[in-house]
Image (cartoon, rainbow, N blue to C red):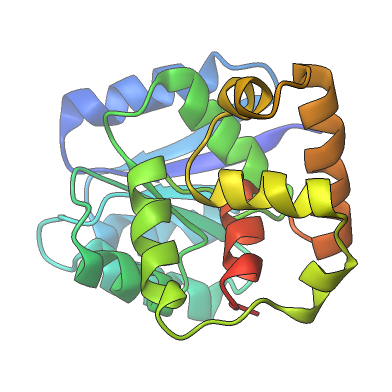
Length: 209
């Protein structure tokens, strides 16, 4: 299935770079690019994309306001905030406005493509720095969700390492198991917790429903 994408980014070079990156990726198609939130709000309903990449720091209406308006008109659309900012207030304002993920612009292109695929599949992708801020925020008052009780000792151990930001290879080395075994355990964790990404799984651990 082809995933269609619209982009709202005021910097011309960045906008064209994003369009080229996503347009050249298998299974993805860029259906529109826009320099302002106002232009995006006018044209994205006509383009009807699956996913929108949204810059925060836009001229006129900012990206957070645009997400809020867009979600009211197109509730099922998936919006990824793409920005150079990792300040806590912007992260949570974006999520409250309806954003489905929050990425930093300096992430590798292959990770951007993966994030688009992930959000389309129902996940909530975030750059690692962002995920840590969100997890730390909920860690203050959160308690493990009931779904976590279904995990085996090994699965819970792996989930805790995922929440700390460990990559699969680091988990394998830390636990002296193979990468294949790590992937098997992670798949089981995702299935039991009904999630699609490490961020969602980690939030389950710290009590976010």
